[in-house]
Length: 87
Image 1 (cartoon, rainbow, N blue to C red):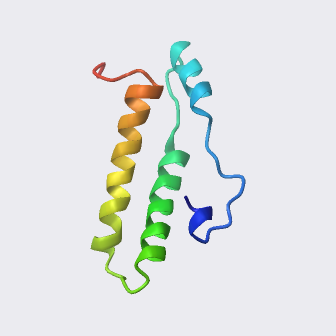
Image 2 (tube, rainbow, N blue to C red):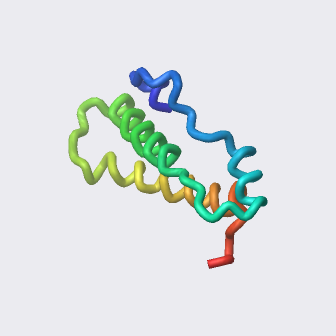
């Protein structure tokens, strides 16, 4: 998403979800997904500015960025890490 909206980060891909699933199944205690979250937030902000070049209010571009992070976390917890409902 970042690169599609003017960014130049060809190697920023995060860890493949299959590798995260494998680590989670092996009882790895800590799995970092921060890079994925930062990429999601930055990509959403870049996309917003690309689609709305006249906007500058952080309340407008941070709202969809936060929503995208929430969806990413939900996806990772349920579909990748398998820890939904285990807190």
